[in-house]
Length: 256
Image 1 (tube, rainbow, N blue to C red):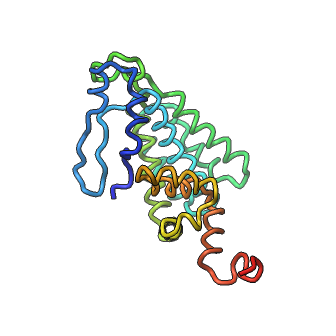
Image 2 (spheres, rainbow, N blue to C red; image 1 turned 90 degrees about the horizontal axis):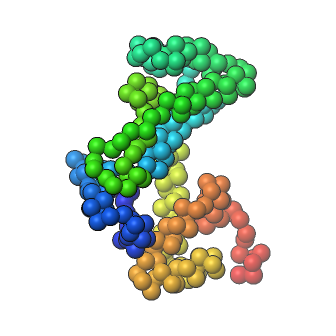
């Protein structure tokens, strides 16, 4: 911890990215908001326009699409949804969402696949169409820094209710945490394995990139990127071939 940050090896790329900005914009844009916890990373004070759009899209995906997955898997039920989402959102305001959330709840938990999809589409559309473009409080000159995409207060609160519901009812469930822990062990084991003998174990094209990066003392980043590019299925299969007896090719079959 912290798990995220800007790596030293990315500095030249970052410098190239902000080079068109004025010196004043660069200095303001790079200001840091210090973290109050050793377990959380520092954050930049400001974000670019496209970054603000990406963060809203990510929040919608977390709050709405992860909810759909939980409903399909039977992790949450209608009563929980009505108590923790419908009632609080209805009490928020007179928005379209507040007036229709009860009806959407019944569609979300319908046995008919198309009704659930309609409800998800309506929820996503409601949030997207209420996004506003506002001028940043800082005095930037470049338009990509001057403006941010934001939710009106009532929709920010509503999405926060969805996200808290997903976090408490889905993410924190022991069954989900076990899957997450299993994934962590797979990633850590693969990294340690490749890092122990990259010349022997990395695929040829990745090995070439590792050799070039290693000359700049950055070989571990290549291994990290290689693992990050794996699908869950590929990583699990590779882990099984490496560590589970009788999984994958036998020594005899490859001439050992």
